[in-house]
Image (cartoon, rainbow, N blue to C red; front, side, top):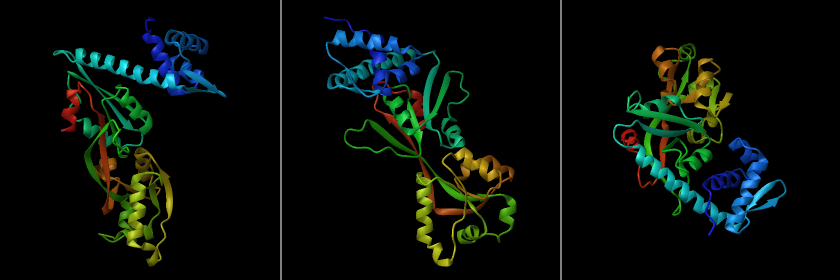
Length: 296
């Protein structure tokens, strides 16, 4: 009976994820020929082809899918072993958090505040797309993913989704823009007087704002929203507001420092609109105790 080589399995997983030998070789910092040779060695050991070539891409076979499921289980068990043994008393503990690239940095810092600066804790932060972060979570290279997009769940979903915060959303602009309006100006008055800095249409915050505008039926009052800029990144919305490009639709926590310094002003609180933040985890046999501390 052939003895499985874990290095071959690791290369196989990389090829399955990338879909090409070139992509896997680049991700692993190896030559394409080296990856190809070792995949062939694994196929010989298992007695089955794991991939079929489709043009420039590799399509996983039925045998390859079975092998990938078992490989994931093998590495998941290895990660559990490492995590369990490395959590021995007296050793520094590590919490690995992934955050959606567009998520507010201020919110991330507040979430991690209970454990930041502790001598016994190391925090590893990784940002990226929701799909890439969730894959890393399933591969146990992350303990949790912070997002404002709750992942779809069904009976077969591995995700545990915890609602951790809900932040109000406001119209925020420069003091000069605020002074041009009466105190307590309505949303209609703000929109009539100033262009807007908005999240991009595919974001949940933009969808909520557009729905709010429809409910208020501002168009019947002869008011048309003028868009000065759109961005899917909270940090960019913050910079655009600071540059006085327009009035931003943004959670105040994102511009907390500017509001405290008076360089930006909350011009109108959008009472019917909020941004919800989620922590996504998976069920683990040995959960990271640090995660419980920040979730609580």
